[in-house]
Length: 108
Image (cartoon, rainbow, N blue to C red; front, side):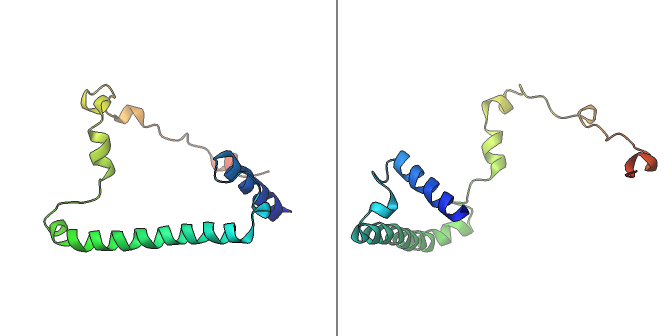
């Protein structure tokens, strides 16, 4: 039951985003094979291209060029953070959880 529902929802999703105009069961075997080959072929080609680019840019990465963006680099360039419209966190912002006695924590 779960698998059938999952397949039905996947088919509906594919139809809604315009990948197919009918259900997967209604596609001829040639079209199914073509779609699978296209998907795996694209991934393989992407892997080859990425590997070549990484090999070519490898020496430059040693010197700090072409590094992946860090999250801190991204949000520190945000206009709201730069203008300091978001106040810094203080100790007053951090609340200690309320202390509970041992009697309150036990299940009676």
